[in-house]
Amino acid sequence: MAVPDDSLLLGFSAPLFRDPGGRLLAERQTILGLKAWRDNFSHVTAFSICHDGPAPPGWQDVEAEGIGPEVETVPLPNTYRFKTLMRQRRELSESMRVLMGKARYRTFAYGGWIGDPGEIAASVARRNGLSHAIWFDRVESQVARTEAGASLAARTKGNLRAAVFTYHENRAARAADLTLLHGATVFDHFKGIARNPHQVEDIHYTESDHAPADFIERKAAEVADGVLNILYCGRAAAMKGPLDWIRTIAALKERGISFRARWLGDGEMLNEMRVAAARAGLTGTDLTFEGFVSDPDKVREAYRKADLLLFCHLTDESPRNLIESLLSATPIIGYRDPYSAGLVEEKGAGMLVRRGDVAGLVEAVAALATDRARLADLIRRAGASARHLTQANVFRRRSEIIRSQLNQPRR
Image (spheres, helix red, strand yellow):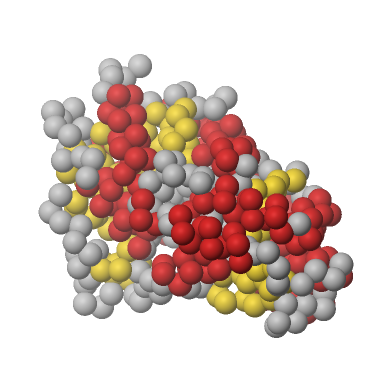
């Protein structure tokens, strides 16, 4: 079934939306990714589940964004709905088998839950002996445990979900001809499980996204005194450690540190964060919750205005917000894992403590609040970091790995 050309079948994780006029809408980051794959393969067929109805803020018209004829977008039924999965699985599996037969290379973003399109695609490829790659950017089994509630019933449900994720993740990684793993933390988790693991990056930034040299120097000079500007950009979800973040902010206030903190991002724990902040005595002057911000220019402005990014990530993942921070000459201060450590160690652009050590995090931020020369140095180091992480570079490398590793007889 091999096809002698340079075509790619790509499964991506963010859903599509179909509006009443029939237009397909995709997340901005998905659009950027499809364009990057298009630049590296002669033809791309890309699939994901599709919802009918209004898209979230920031979703864009796939056709209007100029994807072009080199990219074919295939909407799938929402197989996360069990009834839909049971009713359409056989037909969907056959459709995927046909799509796989038309592509030279095949790679699927992998979630691992029942009905996940990546899991369905990987299963089809295994059954038909087709070479394929799977892609992880976090460890879903850990997320399931972290995001479970505190009650016994919720913890039990979380553990059962985690067991399903673990079984599917491990089976897929052992069987795939290639496992692409975003960042050092996710790579470390799967390197002993996957049949053929490769660490890669997933970046959608260009050289122009890096803060210019004159801005970096000005920012370093302006941090000499004044209020400390603290930022986090990301979902208010348990895996992000939002309550640890609130505890850190509250402890800084108790110590008399002058700061302004901002949380950009929506999520299921946002109201719980607000309640925790109020109980800790944090006011609207101390901390603002700004919700989801769809405008990338406003997000970049927030990063550039911040003196540091404070993060409390609790699961093995490789979040892009740490790189976004470095591109804006903003040091990263938070919990250590292989991914964050690798970013810091490149130029020394941050301070890390063990995961869960709120007291250590408070000490690190308080030290920078009183040592502005050190903070200015970290700003310069952040501005010098991650210069090699551009969309063109990382997608070129991923494409080369796919060609080299999937262009072999199936073992």
